[in-house]
Length: 389
Length: 149
Image (tube, rainbow over all chains, first blue to last red; front, side, top):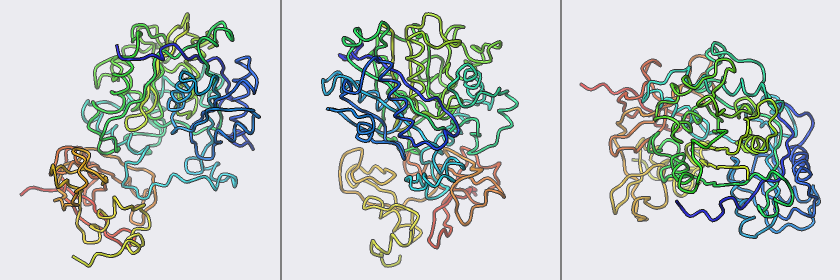
């Protein structure tokens, strides 16, 4: 067991969300963040003066913590911070701030807006023209998104994976999103539909990539001790970690068997009393389908290269989605592929929602433990285990 | 080899790249059609992209060293859409992007495109060699299939 003094010491006591759409209309990302934040603070039974920490990722065009503090009239804040995007950087920052005493109660917000370079309608919005552009200088680049297509080619080469193996990831998310009223993509998807989808960065097609959305999620974190006085069902962070290897430049990654996800899994395993057989809900990131195949294998649900067969063996034909051992759903909210591109805040929200027992028709009966694998292979791999006290 | 140009002129030759003091040697090499990869004077390890220290031994004594440009394709992408370039027409054909394992050191890779190669031959494991094309008025390193005699 690795040192983990923070185990179960910080709780999530508030949840707020706007839900996700292709176009939230004439609203700023700050407006979406405020709506979700007010929802989360009220959900926790708190008011503005109770919040003394504000954490939210740096998103293009998104509000900074000091702007959120100003917009929400938080009178006195002692910790505010803006980590890199992808959800658990901010979660871990907020968790550490509470545990260390930097602050007592954190507002953690995530606001997303379709960006001019990934959405035609967003490009037509004059108010979004000034957003810092994520320019890739030449086609010959494995920068960011392209790297997942490149490593997907390697995955296919090494393991003889089929397009259907990737397709099952997309189908699972879509079937699950149909049971989530917050989700943006809720029309049925078949394997034929997946195979017909437009290639973007071959071997990955349109349906292997998450959907840009407008929307926001927010959470309130405090000490577990304080949480017991606020709610009868606090959800605690049992373990959380990031993971990075040295050669993390996208095209220099050592191999599919050694990257950030492996560091996450080793660290999480060492910090946690809970592992796969105790997990009730599995929430692997799916910004690209290849990332999800990686999480399934790297957590040890199956052998490297075995995710396609694993999905097939654990497929629930009636529900049209994966149910591991007939029991554990994978991204029951529909993930980034079908709920919307939340860079993992959707996975975090679903974990809390399920552990509270509030997931409605997609509720996992008696769910007590959720495993999140967030981010990809290079420089944003993260993981967390959440549980109900 | 041509006379080395100053930093301002270098930036003007590659307006599409963000060049800095760690990467300037790489792009100066391009102007001479030489692929220069950082090599440590202490431990002789190569690394890429260029870093200010050797990640293996922390030496700051690094020499941008010409490599052969021979290697084997390790990763592939066929871009059906993507960033614009004057010699790329996505409407006509998907544009291949390949990451090549260079023969100088296992796991030392360089990413570019591959020319003179039918798309069905753009496969992991294909031996390739370096060629230079012109991109935005400056040399640009690419690969093409290598046929052993």
